[in-house]
Image (cartoon, rainbow, N blue to C red; front, side):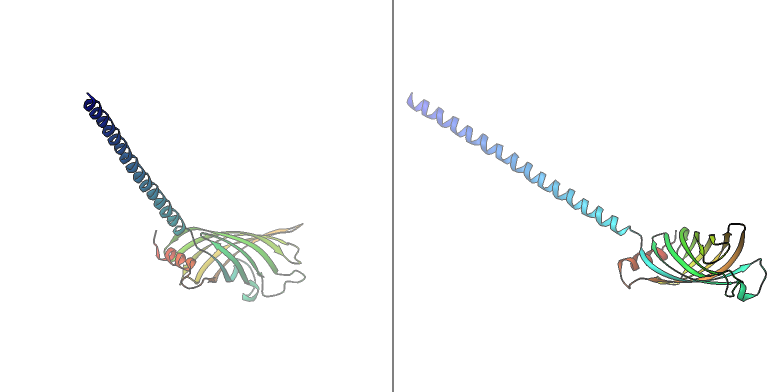
Length: 214
């Protein structure tokens, strides 16, 4: 009888030990699965972050030499010629620039032709090295009776490289004063230099933009 009870107790002890070992295995398995799942989620997040960085558009400073000629007006070339310099910054398809120059290379009586103008420009179309821009500007003509000036123009741009671009421009200037106002049409050319370091991130993004055809 004692042998029977002793054997019965050994059977219960063996069964309990087996059950505990069986419970450890699923717990370990779940831990491995959870660890692998967390690692995968972390990896996917990093990949998504890297992809978003690659999709950023180039940003850089630029300097433009603008040479405009007024049309449908009287006067010689010197009176029609309007040179200007523009310095600004590009944010992808959007430019913010500040221009200064003269509306005539000749003095026009008591009025001055020197001006300063805020010139935001947006690229409304681009395909490879070509792009079309739209500019809406506004500024002030120093010492002029019609001192307030606004501008609307569009341009066709050709990127020779990542740092040099040529453009043909045409548009209108509107001059407003206390007692009078007028408008005039112009056409011209511009040469732009982009301040980009070779092999920089923005240089690579600019290169990718001008080599991609939509």
